Length: 151
Image 1 (cartoon, rainbow, N blue to C red):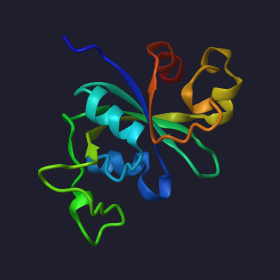
Image 2: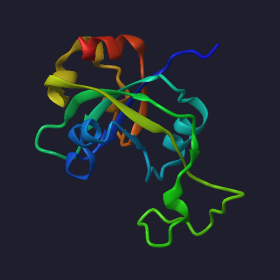
Image 3: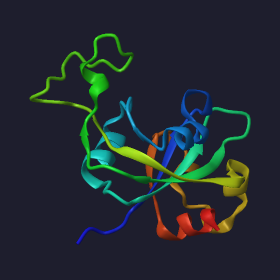
């Protein structure tokens, strides 16, 4: 039996925000080029895992909605595309380096849970996103943190 894990994915809203995901319904989470984030997708994310959708590098950063993992991991197709900014010349179809999962839309929050809200909530102080140097685009979230943010 697979244990449900909870995740936070970060994206710049101009590049790909919750509105894009709502329109598309589902998208591959391509372009991740950090080994730890890649390992989360490849080794630990499972179909159905709940996801917090976080807008970063914007006027009001925060969690703007929710999603879920909608596929098993598979090789990131952008690593094989020489025209892609995410092209990886070392990668081959037989030996891919980067992996993705598909993320499916669940909801848009009526009011986002801003980074300030997260910082000021004592229940959320241990979230990875608040730790110094935490810049990963995918991080695990505890069930308690997920519940506090989605409530």
